[in-house]
View 1 (cartoon, rainbow, N blue to C red):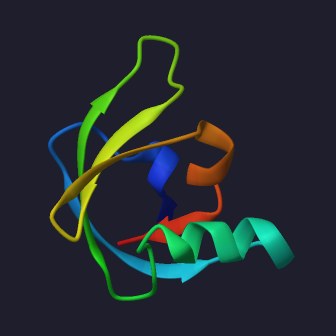
View 2 (tube, rainbow, N blue to C red; view 1 turned 90 degrees about the vertical axis):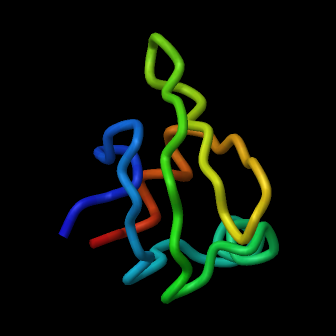
Length: 73
């Protein structure tokens, strides 16, 4: 299993697990990233932070530290 942070641009992946507690996990879920959701990584900034993804039909930029909490396959 890999994290969203390790996913390369152009890859389409499915969320398998969310790690974290409290407000952080809730914030990720409020953005529409839940188990079973399909994500497409569009771009990664030159230093790796942030990562731009397409989720549920909209563009979203998330921080690298949040990407480490999203496991995908």
